[in-house]
Length: 337
Ligand SMILES: [Zn+2]
Image (cartoon, rainbow, N blue to C red; front, side, top):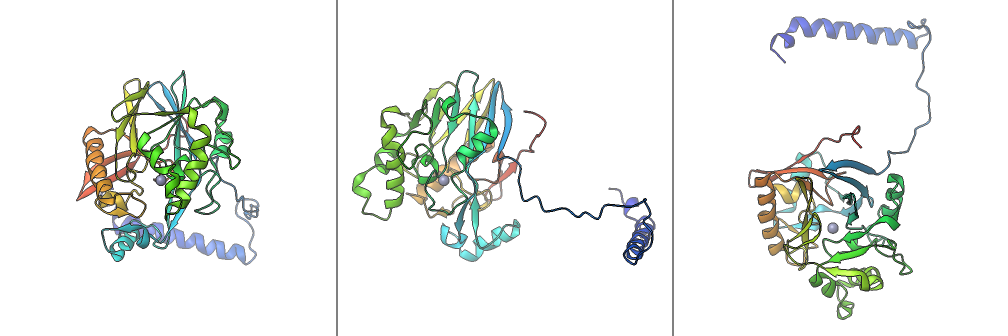
């Protein structure tokens, strides 16, 4: 805006006319006649509903539908993030207009239609309510998006944590995607289904991994670092959050994005200060190193990212900024389906 437009001459009359309008409103309230021949008083019940929980965009020739398993509230950020002081964590959140008392992660699940197969990345919490009642929405979100679970050909898992493998089976052990192969690293399968860890603090994670992975054991295919194990889907090792944690490079028609899994959980905390540590990391220091290395590569190559835990729908870019990175969410295009 030019300086002229901000001059007193232009601002003051508009404020004056606004005061005049407000004066008119007061007169109406006092019973004067309506200026426009009657009017709605905006009396209507609150809708209390929301848009369906899916979002579509194209990646080359492939159609991506992001569906949600629902928000996952982690609680006090001071207890979930380490490596910087609690006060610094709260300050970073406050500066970014985010609540300081509760970190809420989304669970953004892209389902990529490559034309000849439907590939889903991670599956949410499923029947576990370890993080409250808002999770476990995957099936409902898919229904809203018009995607039939029986049409999913492949489920690709970044790692075997509770909020990524939880939607594969029902509480009764029934496979919820009856025609899908499941792709996972063998390191994570072996670690998180290990009966010997049931007596450790990891118990809830081990139980949920066993409940979701063992019933489909015959359908699990192990991928390796660097392998394009499905056309257009390449695994890239990103160890630390779990030993077998991977991100995926997803490509179609010359376009790509990286599905980040849990390379970073938060668009501010672990990006501005990527060496910060996260409470649920198996090896926080190695996790931080993976984060810095891979985010640096994605930033330098300008590869878009699809982040599992960022604010809905989690698609955008990262760029180097300060001592870390900044996330730039892509504008949502509600016309292009
Ligand atoms: Zn996660």
